Length: 455
Image 1 (cartoon, rainbow, N blue to C red):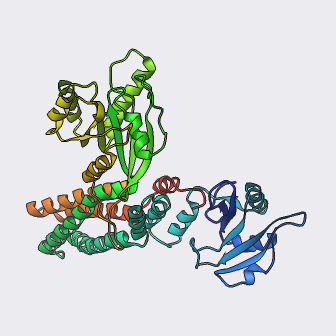
Image 2 (cartoon, rainbow, N blue to C red):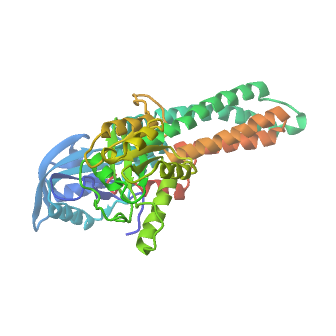
């Protein structure tokens, strides 16, 4: 069935699989009317919005299940369309049969993110708020939840819209000047425009700077555990996660691919990656693993570099660290197997900013965790805080700042109004792309395709 924005759509909004309950959502002009045909109970079209009704779902041949149906009438629903939410028992068979029944009555399956897309298109919220819905669903820490909630409630959007409105006033005056170009009039005071752009630039700088923290809060911190073979990388991963995630063996080269898992430290998500040991090897498969290790290290936000203190010399450590420094990525030097290390080596390393642990015995892991957290101190996100957590927003803010820098340069050099207007229009365009005043079908398709089906 070809998708149309006027279709009535349906999707399971709770996770797939067996559960006590499942919720199926419908939205569209005919959502309540079609549900009435399949529901035995009160006449739903006659019921007030935001009411819940008990009955059964089925047809003249069979009853599928006893259900509770919540009715939401336009425009007082998430999508601002007529909407129905069916709470049924969580058997996959029941869910499948109910959805199949609605499909037979002219409803179609929702596309990924289509409910939220309709909410955006119908003016429920702007594009930045719509993106925050997905962030809220996927939030893994309380900081991520609060940051997404602040954005969904419009804190970020209000700031962007306010900046845009102030710029629009000057843009319109400069455009007016162009209409009177032959008369050499100046409606937009250049000093006032310069002061405004300077103020906006200052605020944009704060927003852009917040992305470093916002990105960490939203996406976590990719942390690579690297080192020579048998340094204890897999043992450390298992110890940090408190589970046997990676295979541990005395045979060098056991780990041949990147193994990863996530844990929360002090409200920050860290994605730990155990990697293949760094060495030259003639084993083709292991060599691929080593190559992937090096690629992962280049992309990491933090490297935990393990040294096997039972076999490594002070000279070896210096050589390995010299190579590590060339990556220009924050790293922590971790001396593993401290219980088997020569006393002289420990003494040599005491002034070298090492964390000494025994991953196998789980000694000093708390000290290691504290050292990790010192690299990324994240302030608690409070209600109302405005943080940039979305890469698309960061890029558009950066492009806006570049356009406004051209405006300031033009004002300093006395550039003509038509060039000023062009740069101001460009900055307005980029700000509009954040909130959705400026959109394209491709942009919307890309954003909402990343949502889950039922949202």
